[in-house]
Image (tube, rainbow, N blue to C red; front, side, top):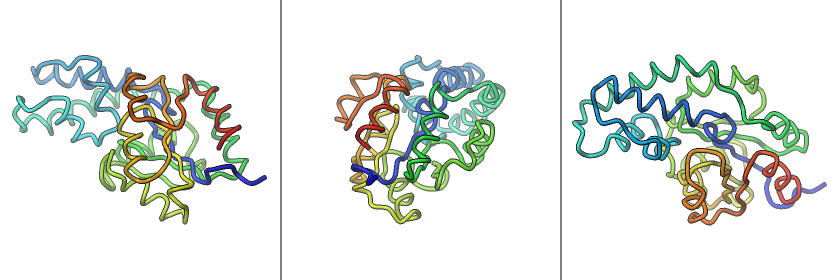
Length: 220
């Protein structure tokens, strides 16, 4: 059966496939606490999820904090996150969703703000190393919402951006899709508030993984 509108489905990782938002927020807050810096609110910490790590720390600390703290924040964040990441799990329904899409012959990819080392650790822990046809990380190219990750993934897989969809839980994901000329789908159970996601005018907005699965089955 011919696919309706997409050949390549690209997923964000944290907050979209992996239930990691709360752990990332707490790790950012703990890093600031370690350094005696103002502790970001949950909303402020969640907002930078999806950006490359160095950029995320610059944004979350704001212009009033001396830039010398940026690499120290990255170091402390990594320390706190790595003590917890083995406890993280995929959202319910994600393995079934990916298996179904793979069996239907879609190209599957990941575009993430994680580092390559971090993504490979997570893929290995989740048993998904062989699931994706290609992956891009923030330390390999431009950070979201720059379109480079999607441009590079489509080039690598010989796909068309017009038949590519980006699925993510942040405005960074949806704006990257817009910037690349690809479609965007929002998931409402991750880092960014629903009204901010809606302002990016995604093609669809899913309340949970089963709803995303149903929509892709009918429309993708």
